[in-house]
Image 1 (cartoon, rainbow, N blue to C red):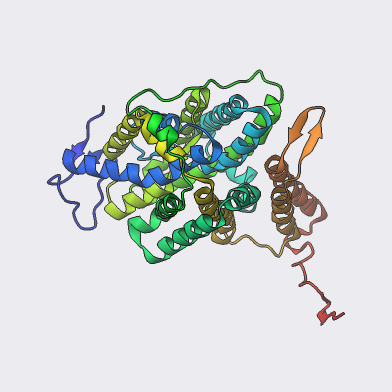
Image 2 (spheres, rainbow, N blue to C red):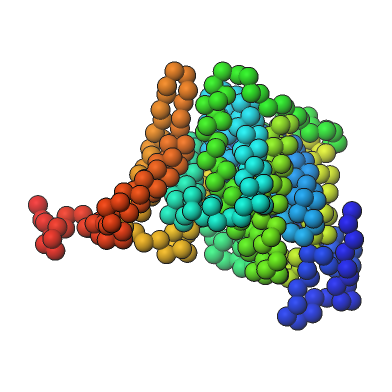
Length: 441
């Protein structure tokens, strides 16, 4: 384990100062902050395997191992926890239903390998080409469509226990509005706890597997399967997730650089490589793909402690938790009603994050090319378009992502050729309005 310089007296963070990645507080405070990082990531990390039917302990184990890989590859200069990525939920759910868990794992591995390759390219060529390939209007559309594509899945769980689901959903919303700081950031986790308590009183939980599970034991492992029929269709379904992981990792690095030192940006390529390798390892042996976590950035911002030592503690803690099958069984006992309530909020939030990318970057939706980039991609995803060609199937996420990229780049190429630029038609008129006159009847 690397060495860190003690920050000040090791107990307090001086005013207007931060604990840099290469510094630490005393070990007591560092361990406490590390455990806080585990709590911050836990609510989101356990949800992905629960929602997709994957084992929670296995996911926890590889999130811890992935975090250690990330710290080593980034030379201990970039604080981050690698938790389960929500971007994998849609393709994992569809792939498991269509071809089984082994094929879904093959999709996760493929995403990891491709992300690592992108990382190597960024390390040597810079990140400008990504911005050109995936400008804000495209990035926002892809992130949004991944969330909205899951709407039917949320309803499927919600409808099984509407009362519990409604209480859970309301709890998530109320907690996010009432609480500030750390509690506000874990509002989804708090909503799950409240919904779970309601489900207990309503007799909706089966504890049989919890009682049977051992307190200590190795997680359940499963190997990725690249040989099953339909696996390549599954892999195609996963590839758009790479674009989301790139955006998340780049955003994470820039966020840490803003709060600590701009020199951190030089580790962008290494961050992508590290997350790619962590995802590859996880998918190979039965875990969920990983990504950097905004929840943990919130903890760093609140504590002003950016020490990577705290993340070593968090990673080791997650690995230890993964060694209890009973812990995994408790989380797998979360009933459909609770999942339906929390996913209604969660999947919608993923969609809103995409829209926020548009807002933050002031995407000009007076341009038809931007209008149709977003409009067509979202309708394809929400409606669940699919194409089947001789056993090869493409789902709404793949088609929507491809549509966003094609419409934007081909549309702009035509606009440049026609020299219409930003004046290629103006904004879409309001429904029922033409030429300034409102059409009634």
